Length: 86
Image 1 (cartoon, rainbow, N blue to C red):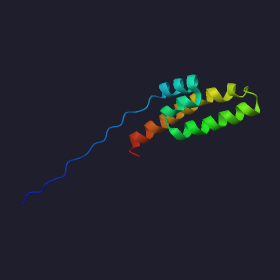
Image 2: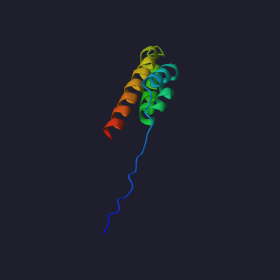
Image 3: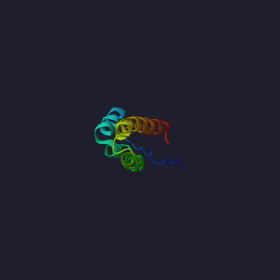
Image 4: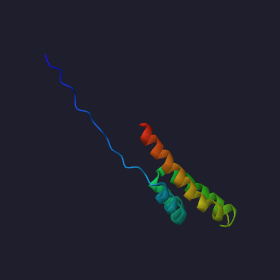
């Protein structure tokens, strides 16, 4: 009796570019974070609104570039999880 093996299924996912995530985050702020995920974009949008109101907009000089760093970190995190198979 011969054994029939089931076909192996391989799912390919394209890695996210950390450089693109950082550039989008820098130029578009929280909207650029949509490239790496909805939740980080939503959180940073809320943070930016609160900071902008409390500092009359001057705090955005700190939080806007932070979007670029968060985009870079989230894209790297996504890629590492994909390599680990998570």
